[in-house]
Length: 242
Image 1 (spheres, rainbow, N blue to C red):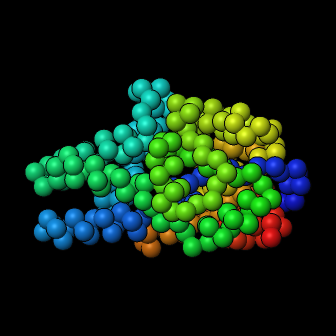
Image 2: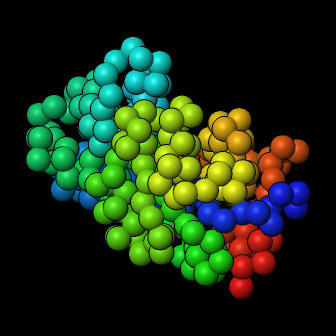
């Protein structure tokens, strides 16, 4: 832990998908139910990977200005429609069923350490989401998973997406603190690199199972992290939030 400057932290912002909640297992559960109901044999682990890749590609196109802004729920639904078509499943999953599957992103599972860690951190700091997902989706997700945040901020308010600086500016504008008084927490290094460039402090919390047991995300420590914490509980311990 690099303690320099952390005594001035007043607020902590959190990435949500992957960092606070697990999306891999909920997608597999929803997919298994579809396979059973429809008599299908879809590899939902592979499909979830493709789904995320298509989502990221569309989001990058928005950031680059190659297409107009869309909320994440629409991006996910577009990506799902593409997957359904490429897998020749158009006649097996109708619009209502696709809508229901797409809603899985509002019903994700909190990682086991998250609620306790957030509860402890909230006693000492203002806590807020800072997610690329849409406002309605994150509000539903926070309620469904019982995540104790003080505020919900998402990229929808900036009509852009991380790592665009406008998204990190939301934390300054809505929480009322300077960038160097805000700690950004994420399990994605690109997110923290952008937050650091914006002037925020950074905390990396690895999520080795974010993409399932077969994946190998980059969870190695970096010298430029202000904090490397193994969990939200460890983060609370390092920040002396009891």
